[in-house]
Image 1 (cartoon, helix red, strand yellow):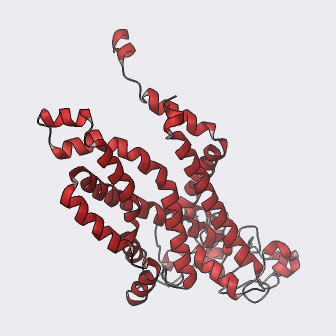
Image 2 (cartoon, one colour; image 1 turned 90 degrees about the vertical axis):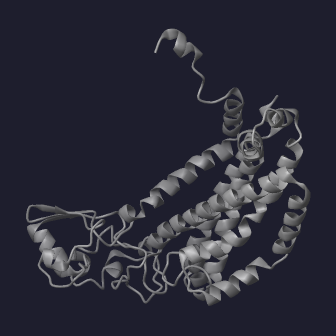
Image 3 (tube, one colour; image 1 turned 90 degrees about the horizontal axis):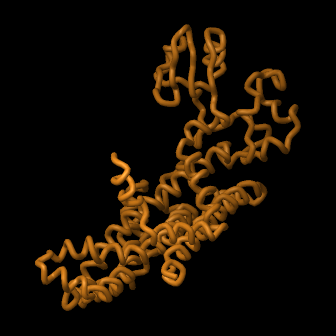
Length: 374
């Protein structure tokens, strides 16, 4: 590329978007909340590498195996079962005698039951016990190789002897993924509906608005409870049920923006030049409407996560056994003698929602016309 061409090359961000990014960074609380949230989300996205009851890498008799990615039969390691239980002392001794294994920091998955807890479940965090108390259920007590750092329950266990830390990591991931998918799908449907309603107006706007008023008057939570009690529980079924109502939140903002801008001079000029309605909606009006929509996204994501947690707390959410913050809070309510259950779920949930609220405030400041155009 010639020097003249490099000088005339368009910048990646327009001056307006650069100013918006600077306004976002000026809100230090929201800026650092975004980085903290992204860090937690990236860590939990690879939850299998952080908390798992399978080794990450095994070298056995000169060959390498990847149990975290592949289900190997136990006959590979000298056994006879169709699925290898890597917490079995026989399998561990066989691997140690003929190779080595690399374990994740937490040697429990979200559904792994710890049979060596020192007290009946729910058991308190391991750091609350002495080393002798913590290792008393192992065959060799303190000298047992499995009584190590990775097998400690740092946040205790739930009422089924499952590690709370592992369930929090997996629960954080599933909550955020559920909220992101629901928010994204709701935004697509809501923005499309609001754009059509606001651009064409007339009978289209009138009929659609009456439908939304009727649809919004339905008691969503009660209907969710009824449908969730009838249909088999599942991630995608629950997502589809909530999507039926969550898209309405975007319609009003987009409709108002399209109603305001559809008679602007540049839209009238585009029509006179023969530009189609859908081209005008997508290329000219939608970017303006997205400014208001983007400021709502963090708060809609916040509400989606809260709704999922509420349904799980009531027992109408994800299938039993799934890692869920709401299910952990329900266990804390049912086991008041184990305060680590309620406190752990509450702290993680409040941290997640607080970070999203702070990010939403920073996004709102970034798109504030009084700050972006001065």
